[in-house]
Image 1: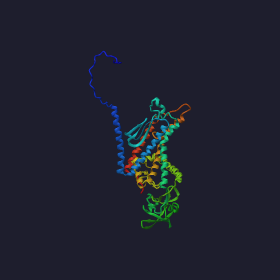
Image 2: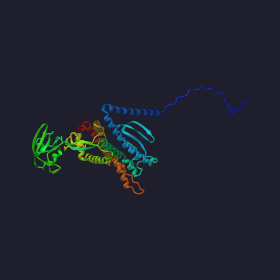
Image 3: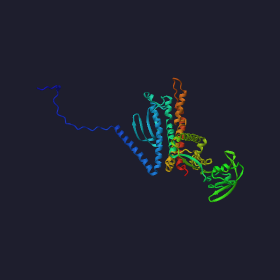
Image 4: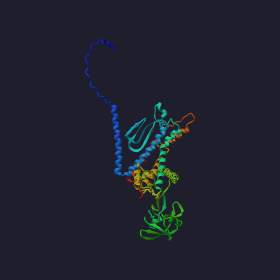
Length: 451
């Protein structure tokens, strides 16, 4: 007896079918494109590593260290924006080092991370930074513009805040490791510059001379010499050391440009002071760190103001075009003196290329010097980014503050950024001109550090 629960077919039986081998799945065009893109991305990463290794081999370890330090500085700037944006609930779609063609990237969640070909900065893209950007309604609550004032401010200032924190840490490390720089008078000073049509030039003093007495009174340092000079219009006899010779020269003092009561010879010396390091303990270094940070910040603010003044930009243009600029008396600050061909070097902006050169030169002498250089660089970049103009971070601070002041209870005011675009484009043009000009000068007329 057989029990068959299957339905009976009215069709005649079919001949058995020959078995067929399984066909390989067909690769889709999108899949191939993804594989190719991943291969290109990894090739880009290999290229970057190879370039860094080549820099270390051909240009020295010092330059490679400075380059990596600057890249880390730029990365931390953008990391500040990224962390504060994510903590505020904003959507960050991109986090890239560099600009231009993409070399390497990977995606984690909603954010694409990577490196681009032109190492001229970095950026973090937060959606809805202004009223011009269209965002789906479903994502409006994730935009920068939808967040409270204090959240937008935290994102805008985060980059510069990172620079300032880095600078404080670097200054502290410099003081503890290298000691505090102390200026002392040098008894071996010599004349390094003589003003034209001055008492010194008329008395035929020469570069390399050293004044050892005034009216028969011995003086060891330049400050001692200045202290015993009589008032303007007085005739004095100077004892001069010129090599192995002892000479005497009589001249009538001129009037000092800054003080009509003081006598004026018309000389400058780059060796009037020596600089030495004094050990500083960790506890002593804390107040000194903030003191030095304040000094660096004020110098950066004044330097940026002088450079972007009409006269500063004029000197910069004349320097680029090799036109003569107004000469001034050489000055020294903490023992570092620019020795370029004109006074414009004293207030000169350097490009990334110039920063690499200066940083490498300092690092070759001592790695401690790199700490101070990076501290100065971080302070300058942090202050510069706070200039209250778009597209700089300071421009976003101004817009957020303006919107806050114009808002009323229950009514949120949003600034129309389209009205600010002409100013933003003008700022970008000036920054491009300054950046390319600084790069040209750093290549053709690099700043030389004193030995």
